[in-house]
Image (cartoon, rainbow, N blue to C red; front, side, top):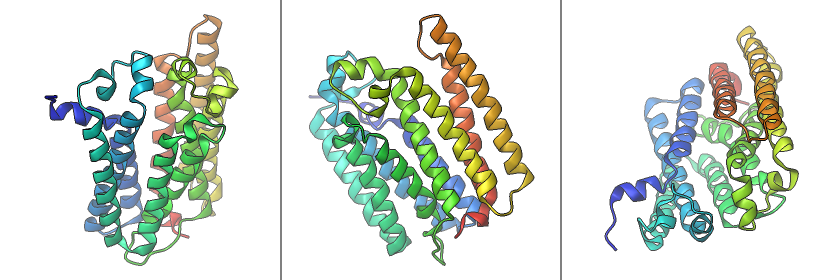
Length: 281
């Protein structure tokens, strides 16, 4: 089969891959890591997320084909599954090797994050425990950053909690557009068992919880963080209203809902980064 490198690139889920990488780079800059450590950590997380995205396209190819997904290169036959599988393992291996240069503690924390992503793709997404890889993985991210410093230190409990809450929100928000297609192919993760309305509600609750942990968990309780919490609450109220309006019309969540979710998540990440050294345990 002749295929274009662009097809392989699309199989990496470039949007989430870039987003998670940028989150880590922003947090690393906020903590004050040396520039070379920020660059190395960014490369590690980029490879990490490339691997997770590629494994998703490879492992879900038959299911994506069954529901007629038009955004999945493997399902469309634009790139062979064998090439995507090889790339998934190769990028995972490179991520693990490079992470060792950041120190053993950072490498271990990174391995937990990588394993969480793969465990979701390998089967946990089909179980009531589908939220665990996201909660554990994203909860580990602040520690991946702080342990990558020249003087490795753990992450503050509230930063880990905020990361986990963001992970929960990411899982529920990510599944929302595909609830019906997933159900047709036997995917029965926690959001699918709860239904659309509870899934939307939990997304907003998790985002507000993340903002609250940043604003109130830190002993400093900066005015900026408090203002950020208020802003996230306001966005959540608007988001719930938009979701209810869409439900009343008999339709799913609108694009505006997802933009509001994204705005709230970005705000929480910025609040974490602004806390800088406070993230260090």
